[in-house]
Length: 160
Length: 160
Image (cartoon, rainbow over all chains, first blue to last red; front, side):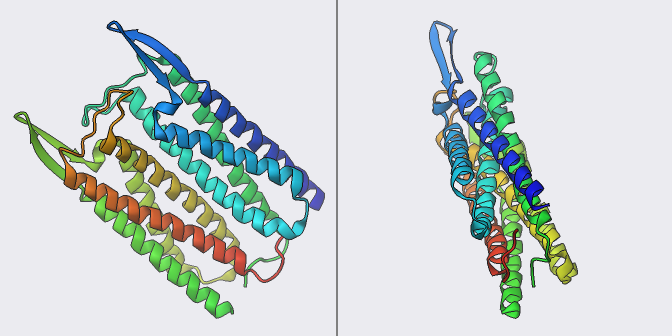
């Protein structure tokens, strides 16, 4: 039982690392230029603070999971790791949502505020961002599953 | 010790309810019209999906904490409540971030995408949104403290 639990945690940790690396790479390589009325319009992730936060948050989550994977086998650290997993899950879900909010304006615009959509001009950029968002959403779900499995599989009643 | 823990949890739960109610009320009442070149420009929270999501998420968190406060005194539900606290903390942090991302564009604009700031036209709307964001950020922190205190104060080592 303890071994199955450990294998599941390792598997989820690897999945989380894969998903966060994919999110960072796909977002960082989302760069496209297009010609609009003699003007060159360039879209890149670093143009928006939400996308920058997204990349930083995913990179931190990835580094954290790598550190946990290669250094912490002591069960005395289980409680600390669980608390840090909660922090990372919150950071990941916040970074995905901030990026989704901006991506939605980029795709649909906001007629009330007069913000026009830009995905018509830079469709490849938008595809990259969408891919990064899907990977990051998966990473947030995986972190929740990690927390859930840790809490669910603790064999004794936890709390007084 | 067990009593102190319970009082702290109750206190944090009340704080969370207060913060989420404040966030919902301040956001829902953020409504302002202004005259721009003979056109009436109206800003309200329901113009943007991120703000709608924000209101729904804060309301769900508030309702959840009320239900926990008035129905669950059994310690057998402690594990379920902890898992739901994690879900709510993730939902809250995501709703705050989505709203912050849009509010930032509303305040500063995004010159790369050609999105102009709107806070010059509707400053009171922006003040309301800022207030709601501060309350919601506090609520997310309080939920994290709830989770932290539950995990930290469990007296036995939790995990195999």
